[in-house]
Image 1 (cartoon, rainbow, N blue to C red):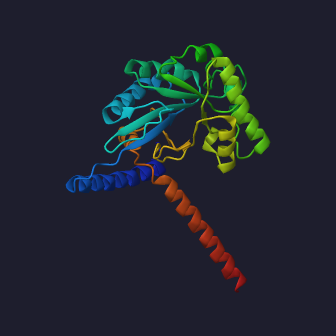
Image 2 (cartoon, helix red, strand yellow; image 1 turned 135 degrees about the horizontal axis):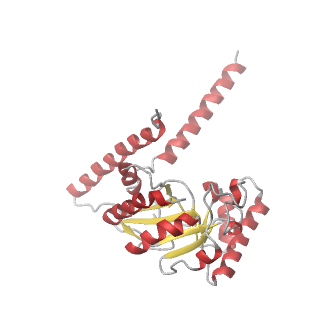
Image 3 (tube, rainbow, N blue to C red; image 1 turned 120 degrees about the vertical axis):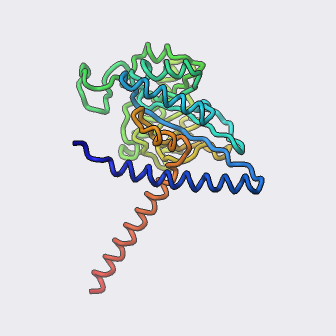
Length: 285
């Protein structure tokens, strides 16, 4: 018997409360003749397996009903009452080409795919599996990358080899960020202006590196609203799976998980406080 995913249920429950409070706020705005706030949510997927293609297509139908999809390099700031959504895919897996992009094309939904340049046409090199392994997802080939619909799919970089850039040193991180852009520009014959941090790991030095490398926008894994101002360079995203529960997906699409970074920060502050308190107590004995 499978155990209940209590962590997932807990996050969903808090998000239901959060979105309910947002609904109250919107109701009060209507009451006083104030227009509802606009917002943009960026979703990111990894794989979309064949067996999950129908689930993914249903999610896209919901996305079209609840929001207006825009491209990942759009500079449009949501106006009051507008709800935007951006679809992105990390790693450039073959299943995305085979199952996700066709569903998006049917619905004319734009997306961005972030490529690990040295893993094209093989098993993901960051998973430390053999090149001929059949039990792991494969990264799209160079030919598949070149054949994606340019009018709907924006190609961005996800580094050369998918390392945690906060752990490899600034020189190697700079190489991963800059050289991957150069490789993609030569391969595609066009500009590459977007970057997604592997594992969502970033800091201010890495953001500076991305600016200096010529990127116009970077994406993290912080589940916060995006395009909140015209000068925004680092955009947050919320992780999504085709197997997400229907309510879970709707809540993510409505930005209801944006309380998470604040909760994590509060948890860290409390842990630090208790550690300092415990240390002070030991010293005073």
